[in-house]
Length: 320
Image 1: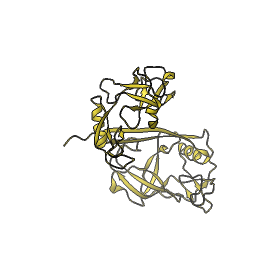
Image 2: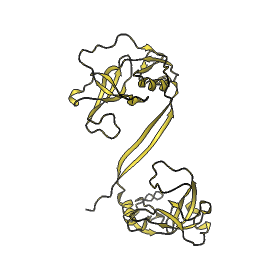
Image 3: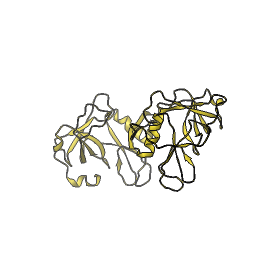
Image 4: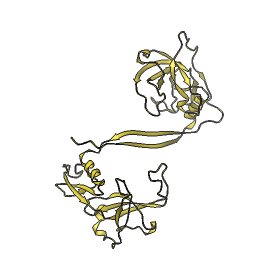
């Protein structure tokens, strides 16, 4: 049985949003070791506080200070923490209803094992040593010492005013997974190691898909006939890139540069590629190009002009 082709893949980007008065007060409060909730018209206390009542949709403004102790309402054990999770050792994900709140807060519980966790367990906040105004200012929850009394009285109103309030939040979004290309794309990638570009032809409409997809999306039939295309092709459309992406894979590529749709000879649709070897303002639709490979690379590094006359518009107008 042949080896299955796989590769690790990471999709990562930072997400930044403005907070508004309610979430600003909540996150700034965490920095100051204060947990704030918000009271609805019918008297419920929501933690974390919401800007709108989830039941009625009305604006909410009545902030209150809740306790930092609470009760586990449900939980799940995490035996193998992953990168970026609250604790590096096994822990429990828990929903904790803080004393004085009517909703539960999701966080981590530091416990020696699943036998030490149960619904109804009394827990308290463990604050992070360095706090910046984020949910991670709660490092985790931990079991309350035996005999810890619950707080007396209902949550007290709070004006939500703190010095130097947090007004924006940047949350890193990251997805790590292992990609398996499958039969069709696997054969395409294997061919690229020999500097050949291949696609698959639909037995019905005869269109050649590059990269191959294993099936024709128009005719909904399997594609199995492998076809070598290119290596030369035609620029169909393009754009000039003036902003260099952070953590770009090719740090040597300076802006501006041209990124184009290229219809390889024999292909039924265009693929993406960078154009180099001529000034940006000389790249044009119909430009004939060929791939340039670097040592050890699986994909062409870029495409350059071949010197041929430009292709007539009618030869690529269906591939725009």
